[in-house]
Image (tube, rainbow, N blue to C red; front, side, top):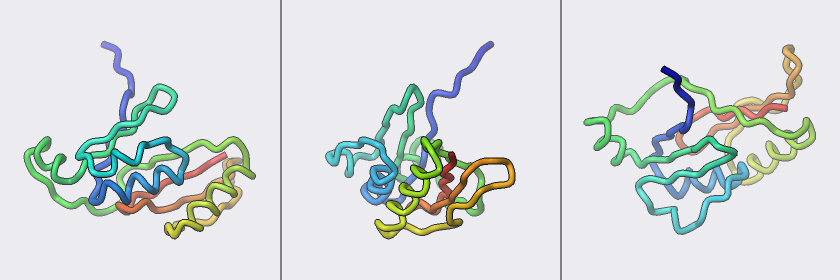
Length: 125
């Protein structure tokens, strides 16, 4: 049996705040989606979905606030310069840095920011 990663879901506390962050990151998400309980965007064949906590509670049969870092969302940037510019754009919009851009020992340019729900979002080139 073959499986394919098709969608990554993110449970959000505030849909508008979360979608604003991902718009700054570069996703084209219509403003009219800000109040929806479920939003999906497709980027090159992989869907990124956002569900309000209330919806997750209904889907999962309950909800416990998670703690700790459990998954990484990592976004490939075109170049070191593009990563640096995107990082500055995100921070310029008031979002929090976890680690400023640096040249990692494994050969990538890397930075980590925090989305409105506390998820660590990696940028790399």
